Image (cartoon, rainbow, N blue to C red; front, top):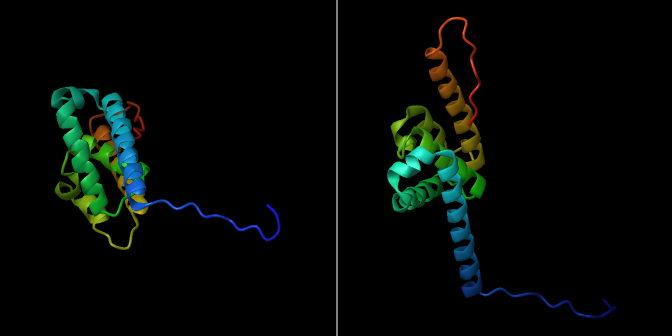
Length: 140
């Protein structure tokens, strides 16, 4: 760049941004469909792919109500839906308490939810163990 030369700014129009947002939403949906089919195959088979798409759309809406905008957090929210049920956010007291905490950001809520979910899963697994059997640490 030469001295005195002006920098030209790139301008992105609203309609261009809408196309980009739509592309990103579709890409994320495809990614999540692959993910839930890989990690929750029995549930997905029982639901059928049309219903899986509905559940994912519902999960996205619910995650947004809890101020989750990062794909990583939305995917973790959906993982917990498949693990604990579609309405775990209102049906399970510890989950609704965390999600309703206005002091926490979306990522903080998901970190706390995962920690608490792992604790509950490990506790449930250990209840079924006999004395002397190993306690496997189940990670989400």
